[in-house]
Length: 138
Image (tube, rainbow, N blue to C red):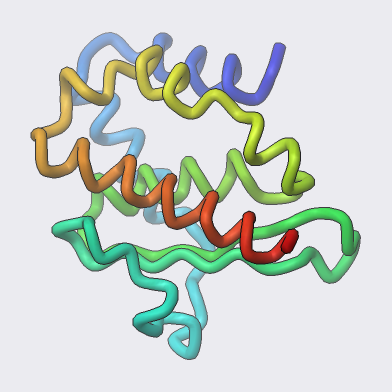
């Protein structure tokens, strides 16, 4: 079972979207705090209505892998950030860029259950994260 399968399975276990929203909120609350020094314009996801920051950097324990920090000012989107940070961190650039995030979002039914603006913002977060990965591997 892949990590994407595990995440999808966790969501499928929950009966309705109220419970899934609560789960996303809990993921966001558990997200390690992002250092204030990293909450700069260069790390901001500008296409998102919420204030979102993400930062990719090489893992201090394994220089072949990338880890992410992230934060957001709204509970649901912070949960999505936490989910993406968890999914992408500790992987090589190639593994991150090969991930089927669209497939995950379809399985989680995010498009059907987030407002159109939030949906656009979620994909903007992914775009910024993968763009940072591309920059690091260059």
